[in-house]
Length: 113
Image 1 (cartoon, rainbow, N blue to C red):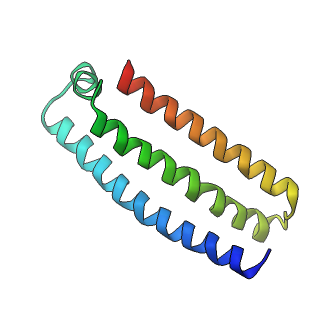
Image 2 (cartoon, rainbow, N blue to C red; image 1 turned 30 degrees about the horizontal axis):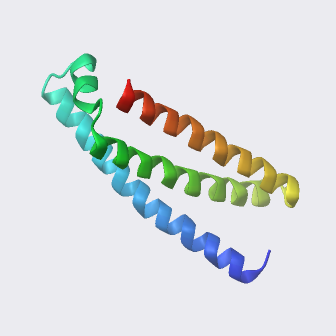
């Protein structure tokens, strides 16, 4: 892999990690707020259904996972399994697609009902 490609992947990994850290923090604070407020699952869904800000936040969360996880898995596969080449990239592209599809489906399910 070319050095410029490695550098771009390194930056994508770090930037997506920063976004993920913020998203996880907001997500956990929201959970604590909902739990301390005594909200039921029905009440939470009533507040999130149709809420565009909620949906946008979680779309950003999902997309950052789609960027971050496959890059990290690639490094692990290369270092621990000595797995390189096209088959690794195809497998990780499939992982990214699966993560994106399931994550966005979950966001849509909560947003649209």
